[in-house]
Length: 417
Image 1 (cartoon, rainbow, N blue to C red):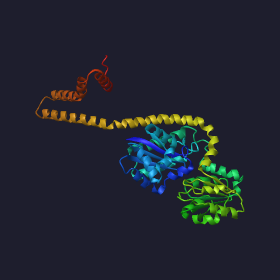
Image 2 (image 1 turned 90 degrees about the vertical axis):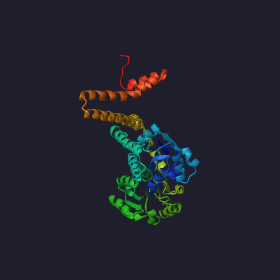
Image 3 (image 1 turned 30 degrees about the vertical axis):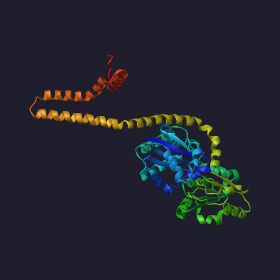
Image 4 (image 1 turned 90 degrees about the horizontal axis):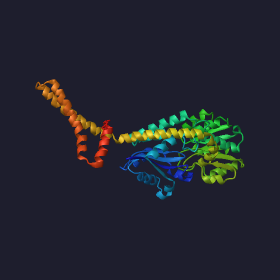
């Protein structure tokens, strides 16, 4: 059984493909159970974010997981296979370390991905699909990410997705303080965006959420107000900036709703930022002259210019990761020897018990203790040495030389002396 990582991300697949394989967070535990139902995949965790969907597995072969991913989302394998990557063992470990450290993110060094990986591990553990291998790998992954962030400047002056969202709005509206902002959803991404916009002191902040109580709680933090999702159509025209990130399987804002809002606004411009996967705002809305619609892929272009300043930090981070990958693989290889070590110790223990029982019988008959101890030590030595000496005597030629070298290394012998 080997470790594998497979999936697709913003490097390999456009948003239109990524949103087809995104997982509903509420259905993720059951999905994990289904993935590991057969014997091909023994352990599994799924990371599903705006920019990536990845399966981390302990399996005999990765093909089953790739087929399952397409089948689960009711897609033909050929529709996603051009965008999929499959990383075995060392590459999988290195990839997870890089993802958690923010080296594979759209915004280099962004910290949000580490929390998302921790959540993926918690969901898998609660679903019962996180075994010894993946549990150890996740714990090592989190430790490496912490080391990278604390010993390098990878997170210095970071441009987060939330900050990039504000930057997009500032392209159209020079002064955010004069604008009204609507947030659709109340998750972590919306919370981060709301914090960045609140720092600009907009004229109004409103949160629309399926669960109104949660929306009200978030709005209260930023001195805003809340509305129900079904009120958006009537009130959309009130807002200059709309930021949406929900887990809705269907769009929240359609072309018709946006057209009505623009007419009501007498064609004053609107900025819409869709951070959801699948998308909350129909792509056709971008065709409207007075709507500036931005997607996740657009955010990536904004932060591209900041990458060069962090090259040194990236080099340092990659060196740390390379070293820690070697350490984890050493643990993995050592673990494969555990059954042999256990069998060897069990055999030695049986020999020991046999010799001790024989010695106790001799002592019970009144034999001289010194002679009994001598006999015990000789008997135990002969039994322990019988296996390697017999193997040497029965081997020939090159095999004997290789075996002799191996035994000398195991017992720290120096026959040439």
